[in-house]
Image 1 (cartoon, helix red, strand yellow):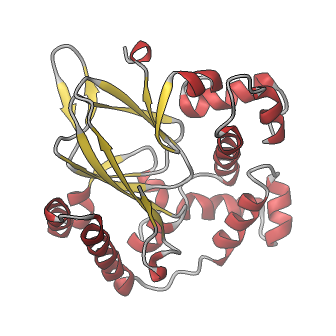
Image 2 (tube, one colour):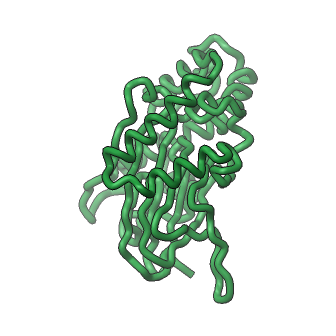
Length: 274
Protein backbone atom coordinates (compact mmCIF):
# COMPACT_ATOMS: atom_id res chain seq x y z
CA UNK A 1 0.00 0.00 0.00
CA UNK A 2 1.27 3.47 -0.91
CA UNK A 3 0.23 6.53 1.12
CA UNK A 4 1.09 10.20 0.64
CA UNK A 5 2.57 12.18 3.56
CA UNK A 6 0.93 15.29 4.98
CA UNK A 7 0.86 18.29 2.64
CA UNK A 8 3.69 20.20 4.32
CA UNK A 9 5.98 17.15 4.05
CA UNK A 10 5.29 16.51 0.35
CA UNK A 11 8.32 18.56 -0.87
CA UNK A 12 10.57 16.23 1.16
CA UNK A 13 8.80 12.85 1.30
CA UNK A 14 7.41 11.20 -1.82
CA UNK A 15 5.27 8.58 -0.07
CA UNK A 16 5.08 5.90 2.61
CA UNK A 17 4.98 2.22 1.61
CA UNK A 18 3.51 -0.65 3.61
CA UNK A 19 4.61 -4.13 2.48
CA UNK A 20 3.86 -7.57 3.85
CA UNK A 21 5.49 -10.88 2.93
CA UNK A 22 4.22 -14.24 4.21
CA UNK A 23 6.85 -16.46 2.54
CA UNK A 24 9.06 -18.23 5.09
CA UNK A 25 11.58 -19.62 2.61
CA UNK A 26 14.91 -17.93 1.97
CA UNK A 27 14.42 -15.17 -0.60
CA UNK A 28 16.69 -12.74 -2.36
CA UNK A 29 15.35 -9.20 -2.57
CA UNK A 30 17.08 -6.86 -5.00
CA UNK A 31 17.00 -3.14 -4.31
CA UNK A 32 17.99 -0.84 -7.16
CA UNK A 33 17.93 2.90 -7.59
CA UNK A 34 14.76 4.82 -8.35
CA UNK A 35 16.47 8.20 -7.78
CA UNK A 36 15.20 8.42 -4.20
CA UNK A 37 16.56 7.53 -0.78
CA UNK A 38 14.61 6.03 2.08
CA UNK A 39 14.17 4.66 5.58
CA UNK A 40 13.06 1.06 6.17
CA UNK A 41 11.37 -0.19 9.32
CA UNK A 42 11.14 -4.01 9.48
CA UNK A 43 8.78 -5.79 11.84
CA UNK A 44 8.27 -9.46 12.79
CA UNK A 45 11.74 -10.31 11.47
CA UNK A 46 14.84 -8.43 10.39
CA UNK A 47 16.18 -8.48 6.85
CA UNK A 48 19.60 -9.94 6.11
CA UNK A 49 22.49 -8.15 4.39
CA UNK A 50 24.51 -11.28 3.67
CA UNK A 51 23.89 -15.00 3.90
CA UNK A 52 25.79 -18.25 3.39
CA UNK A 53 25.54 -21.83 4.67
CA UNK A 54 27.02 -20.96 8.07
CA UNK A 55 26.19 -17.36 8.95
CA UNK A 56 23.62 -14.63 8.44
CA UNK A 57 24.38 -10.94 8.81
CA UNK A 58 21.20 -9.20 9.93
CA UNK A 59 20.36 -5.61 9.11
CA UNK A 60 19.12 -3.28 11.86
CA UNK A 61 15.37 -3.29 12.52
CA UNK A 62 15.32 0.22 11.10
CA UNK A 63 17.84 1.62 8.65
CA UNK A 64 18.43 4.42 6.18
CA UNK A 65 19.60 3.75 2.63
CA UNK A 66 21.28 6.34 0.40
CA UNK A 67 21.39 6.67 -3.36
CA UNK A 68 22.51 3.48 -5.04
CA UNK A 69 25.06 3.45 -7.84
CA UNK A 70 23.74 0.13 -9.10
CA UNK A 71 21.87 -2.45 -7.02
CA UNK A 72 22.08 -4.12 -3.61
CA UNK A 73 20.89 -7.60 -2.60
CA UNK A 74 19.26 -8.24 0.75
CA UNK A 75 17.63 -11.43 1.98
CA UNK A 76 14.75 -12.72 4.04
CA UNK A 77 14.39 -16.10 5.73
CA UNK A 78 10.96 -15.54 7.25
CA UNK A 79 7.77 -13.52 6.89
CA UNK A 80 8.15 -9.78 7.40
CA UNK A 81 6.29 -6.48 7.43
CA UNK A 82 7.99 -3.33 6.11
CA UNK A 83 7.20 0.34 6.50
CA UNK A 84 9.28 2.39 4.05
CA UNK A 85 9.65 6.16 3.95
CA UNK A 86 10.56 7.15 0.38
CA UNK A 87 12.12 10.61 0.19
CA UNK A 88 12.08 13.01 -2.72
CA UNK A 89 15.45 12.95 -4.58
CA UNK A 90 16.80 15.82 -2.43
CA UNK A 91 14.42 15.35 0.51
CA UNK A 92 16.81 13.58 2.85
CA UNK A 93 19.46 16.26 2.34
CA UNK A 94 16.95 18.99 3.12
CA UNK A 95 15.52 17.36 6.25
CA UNK A 96 18.78 16.08 7.73
CA UNK A 97 21.02 18.93 6.52
CA UNK A 98 23.73 16.36 5.70
CA UNK A 99 25.42 16.12 2.27
CA UNK A 100 23.72 13.35 0.28
CA UNK A 101 27.03 11.95 -0.98
CA UNK A 102 27.80 10.82 2.60
CA UNK A 103 24.97 8.26 2.30
CA UNK A 104 25.72 7.03 -1.24
CA UNK A 105 25.66 3.20 -1.51
CA UNK A 106 25.23 3.02 2.28
CA UNK A 107 22.85 1.34 4.68
CA UNK A 108 22.98 2.99 8.10
CA UNK A 109 21.37 2.10 11.41
CA UNK A 110 18.62 4.63 12.08
CA UNK A 111 19.92 4.99 15.63
CA UNK A 112 23.21 6.35 14.25
CA UNK A 113 21.30 9.18 12.57
CA UNK A 114 18.53 9.97 15.05
CA UNK A 115 19.89 8.52 18.33
CA UNK A 116 17.19 7.44 20.79
CA UNK A 117 14.47 9.23 18.82
CA UNK A 118 14.93 6.71 16.00
CA UNK A 119 14.53 3.77 18.38
CA UNK A 120 11.45 5.37 19.94
CA UNK A 121 9.85 5.77 16.50
CA UNK A 122 10.60 2.12 15.65
CA UNK A 123 8.95 1.00 18.89
CA UNK A 124 5.89 3.21 18.45
CA UNK A 125 5.39 2.02 14.87
CA UNK A 126 5.53 -1.59 16.03
CA UNK A 127 2.80 -0.83 18.59
CA UNK A 128 0.52 0.98 16.10
CA UNK A 129 -2.52 -1.18 15.47
CA UNK A 130 -3.52 0.29 12.10
CA UNK A 131 -2.14 2.18 9.12
CA UNK A 132 -3.71 5.45 10.24
CA UNK A 133 -1.80 5.44 13.52
CA UNK A 134 1.47 4.59 11.79
CA UNK A 135 1.01 7.39 9.24
CA UNK A 136 0.24 9.84 12.04
CA UNK A 137 3.42 8.80 13.88
CA UNK A 138 5.55 9.22 10.74
CA UNK A 139 4.05 12.60 9.89
CA UNK A 140 4.61 13.85 13.43
CA UNK A 141 8.23 12.64 13.49
CA UNK A 142 9.17 14.31 10.21
CA UNK A 143 7.22 17.50 10.98
CA UNK A 144 9.43 17.83 14.07
CA UNK A 145 12.50 17.63 11.83
CA UNK A 146 10.97 20.16 9.47
CA UNK A 147 10.37 22.63 12.30
CA UNK A 148 14.05 22.43 13.30
CA UNK A 149 15.65 22.65 9.88
CA UNK A 150 17.36 25.80 8.69
CA UNK A 151 16.58 27.42 5.36
CA UNK A 152 18.32 25.86 2.37
CA UNK A 153 18.00 27.33 -1.11
CA UNK A 154 17.14 24.38 -3.34
CA UNK A 155 15.91 26.37 -6.34
CA UNK A 156 18.69 25.21 -8.66
CA UNK A 157 18.10 21.56 -7.69
CA UNK A 158 14.31 21.74 -7.85
CA UNK A 159 14.46 23.45 -11.26
CA UNK A 160 16.95 20.85 -12.53
CA UNK A 161 14.90 17.93 -11.21
CA UNK A 162 11.78 19.30 -12.90
CA UNK A 163 13.70 19.60 -16.19
CA UNK A 164 15.10 16.06 -15.99
CA UNK A 165 11.75 14.52 -15.07
CA UNK A 166 9.95 16.46 -17.80
CA UNK A 167 12.44 15.08 -20.33
CA UNK A 168 12.11 11.58 -18.79
CA UNK A 169 15.87 11.43 -18.21
CA UNK A 170 16.76 12.00 -21.87
CA UNK A 171 18.90 15.15 -21.98
CA UNK A 172 22.49 16.38 -22.13
CA UNK A 173 24.34 18.18 -19.34
CA UNK A 174 24.88 21.04 -21.78
CA UNK A 175 21.10 21.36 -22.22
CA UNK A 176 20.58 21.38 -18.45
CA UNK A 177 23.27 24.03 -18.00
CA UNK A 178 21.65 26.19 -20.67
CA UNK A 179 18.23 25.82 -19.07
CA UNK A 180 19.37 26.69 -15.54
CA UNK A 181 22.08 29.24 -16.47
CA UNK A 182 24.54 27.45 -14.21
CA UNK A 183 27.81 25.84 -15.28
CA UNK A 184 28.03 22.09 -15.74
CA UNK A 185 30.62 21.95 -12.95
CA UNK A 186 28.35 23.80 -10.53
CA UNK A 187 25.42 21.51 -11.36
CA UNK A 188 27.57 18.43 -10.77
CA UNK A 189 28.65 19.74 -7.36
CA UNK A 190 25.13 20.69 -6.25
CA UNK A 191 23.67 17.35 -7.35
CA UNK A 192 26.35 15.45 -5.46
CA UNK A 193 25.60 17.49 -2.34
CA UNK A 194 21.78 17.51 -2.52
CA UNK A 195 20.82 14.36 -4.44
CA UNK A 196 23.82 12.05 -4.10
CA UNK A 197 24.03 11.28 -7.84
CA UNK A 198 25.36 13.29 -10.76
CA UNK A 199 22.75 14.86 -13.07
CA UNK A 200 23.50 12.29 -15.80
CA UNK A 201 23.38 9.35 -13.40
CA UNK A 202 20.09 10.60 -12.00
CA UNK A 203 18.83 11.05 -15.57
CA UNK A 204 19.73 7.44 -16.44
CA UNK A 205 17.71 6.25 -13.42
CA UNK A 206 14.73 8.36 -14.49
CA UNK A 207 14.98 6.95 -18.02
CA UNK A 208 15.10 3.38 -16.66
CA UNK A 209 11.94 3.90 -14.63
CA UNK A 210 10.22 5.55 -17.58
CA UNK A 211 10.98 2.35 -19.50
CA UNK A 212 9.52 0.28 -16.63
CA UNK A 213 6.42 2.44 -16.64
CA UNK A 214 5.96 1.89 -20.39
CA UNK A 215 6.50 -1.83 -19.80
CA UNK A 216 3.81 -2.09 -17.13
CA UNK A 217 0.84 -4.33 -17.96
CA UNK A 218 2.26 -5.29 -21.35
CA UNK A 219 1.58 -8.79 -22.73
CA UNK A 220 4.16 -11.55 -23.14
CA UNK A 221 4.72 -10.76 -26.83
CA UNK A 222 5.82 -7.20 -26.05
CA UNK A 223 8.59 -5.76 -28.25
CA UNK A 224 11.17 -4.65 -25.69
CA UNK A 225 13.37 -2.97 -28.28
CA UNK A 226 10.51 -0.77 -29.47
CA UNK A 227 9.58 0.26 -25.93
CA UNK A 228 13.25 0.86 -25.14
CA UNK A 229 13.51 3.16 -28.13
CA UNK A 230 10.44 5.09 -26.92
CA UNK A 231 12.20 5.50 -23.56
CA UNK A 232 15.34 6.97 -25.16
CA UNK A 233 17.56 3.89 -25.59
CA UNK A 234 19.26 3.83 -28.97
CA UNK A 235 18.99 0.07 -29.57
CA UNK A 236 18.51 -3.30 -27.86
CA UNK A 237 22.17 -3.57 -26.87
CA UNK A 238 22.07 -0.14 -25.21
CA UNK A 239 18.87 -1.05 -23.37
CA UNK A 240 20.20 -4.35 -22.03
CA UNK A 241 23.54 -2.84 -20.99
CA UNK A 242 21.91 0.03 -19.06
CA UNK A 243 19.24 -2.21 -17.55
CA UNK A 244 21.78 -4.73 -16.27
CA UNK A 245 23.99 -1.97 -14.90
CA UNK A 246 21.12 -0.75 -12.71
CA UNK A 247 19.40 -4.03 -11.83
CA UNK A 248 21.87 -6.84 -12.49
CA UNK A 249 19.38 -8.67 -14.74
CA UNK A 250 18.03 -8.31 -18.26
CA UNK A 251 14.65 -6.75 -19.07
CA UNK A 252 13.22 -10.20 -19.90
CA UNK A 253 14.43 -11.63 -16.59
CA UNK A 254 12.78 -8.68 -14.87
CA UNK A 255 9.52 -9.42 -16.69
CA UNK A 256 9.35 -13.19 -16.28
CA UNK A 257 11.63 -14.23 -13.40
CA UNK A 258 10.87 -11.75 -10.64
CA UNK A 259 8.07 -10.55 -8.41
CA UNK A 260 7.73 -6.80 -8.06
CA UNK A 261 7.28 -5.63 -4.46
CA UNK A 262 7.78 -1.96 -5.34
CA UNK A 263 9.15 -0.02 -8.32
CA UNK A 264 12.72 -0.66 -7.21
CA UNK A 265 12.46 -3.74 -4.97
CA UNK A 266 12.05 -7.13 -6.61
CA UNK A 267 11.94 -10.69 -5.35
CA UNK A 268 13.98 -12.95 -7.60
CA UNK A 269 12.91 -16.45 -8.54
CA UNK A 270 14.53 -19.44 -6.87
CA UNK A 271 16.70 -20.00 -9.93
CA UNK A 272 18.35 -16.62 -9.34
CA UNK A 273 18.89 -16.86 -5.57
CA UNK A 274 22.26 -18.62 -5.43
